[in-house]
Amino acid sequence: MPTSTYLPSPIVVVNSIDLSDQCTAANLTLNYESQENSSFASPNRSYVAGMGNHELTLTLYMSYAASETYATLKALVGTQTTVRVKPVTGNESATNPDFVLTGCYLEALPVMNASLGELSTIDITFTGGAYTEDVTV
Image (cartoon, rainbow, N blue to C red; front, top):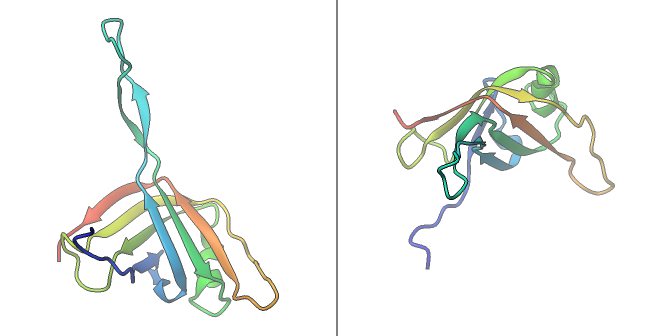
């Protein structure tokens, strides 16, 4: 039985623009490429962490209004930027860390995803960048 419940209402900031009101899903994965460091004396393979290759995938409503999804993201395709996600509103703390990817890369932007009778959403992925976790107020 779980000892705590987390009802997500994250803060999502891309290139200093708050897109929380357009975001329906955020998935941040920390990934360090494995580097084998086994030797002839090792009975088993062993590994150490190599370069970080982190990934943040966002699902966003597609809005073409000023300071919204398309206007914020169109100039970022093919460039590096900073993205911040935080579990809930409020100050940073050990229980509400601000996860930051600095210098992450946006490779692609779907400019239209339309279906009859449905709200338009897109999935975008930021890769790489330096990962930090801010828990200070």
